[in-house]
Image (cartoon, rainbow, N blue to C red):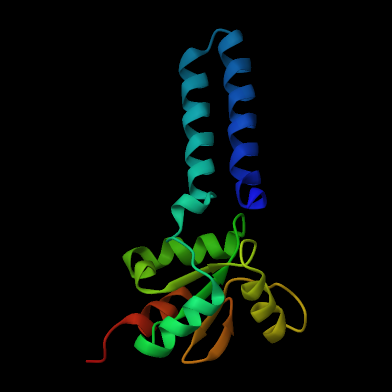
Length: 145
């Protein structure tokens, strides 16, 4: 669990040092701007930005019932962040499994990626797709027309 918060905490600490340094040089406006930018980066890279993760076994059980995709991700991954941002509200219609919090999720990802924990790995209808195009993933959650 601590690994998921390492990057956001590091960003906050660095932002605080940068802001204090800027403020001590007589630039309070720049210090406030720096702190705000680092705080936004910390939020975006935190688990708070992603839908609430569930375990891999629970995600597989739920997807068997309703057919929703499963997204395996980890905090700090730029590709996961890109997928999350580009999905927008559609992200809430998928099951998100944080591989750093769930050993079964990490094992599922390693099983389809030749032992690597390559994320995002999206399972649609039981088939894995490694780092898929966000537009394609969004299409997978839309109801058929």
